[in-house]
Structures are given as structure tokens and as C-alpha cells.
Image (cartoon, rainbow, N blue to C red):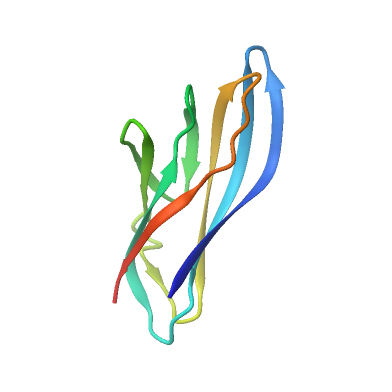
Length: 106
């Protein structure tokens, strides 16, 4: 059993864009460690991934495929890892990430 939770850390408007900083925590709710975790994260219309830290991503067009950064590929039993990102959307849009397809190897 695993979960992922996104928490908004800041947002602001600059010019024609609205910016969001999110922290995402991936939880391993198992009694054994897991490795090579990944998940899918929603991509808003007109969204631009400005930066991501402590994880890697691939822009798949309609979503972002997110995976560990290598050094944090293992999540200890009943532990967690975190990553963060900054994303921008059009000024009048909003964004709250949807996280799905959480995967890890046992």
C-alpha cells in the first residue's frame, strides 16, 4: 500500500502566468522497503513545468511521468520520500495536481 500527497507551498502571479510550488510526499505504508518508485501527475492545459527537484519527469503531453532521482529510489518500510516542483499556467487558470498510477518494486 502506497500513497502520494501534494501540498501547495506557494503561488503567485507574474505577468501573464500564475506560478505554483508544490511539495509531493510519496508514502510507503508497507512493512518492507520498495524501490524504483514512479507515478503519473496531471498536466493542466497550457501548463509549463518550470522546474522539479528530487525527482525526474517526462512530459507525456497530457500528463507528467514522474520517477525517483536515483539517489532516492528506495523508500524504507513505513517511510517516505519527497520531491518538489514549480509549474506555471495561464494567469486566469488554477492547478491542483492529480497523482495516479503510483508504482514501486517490492
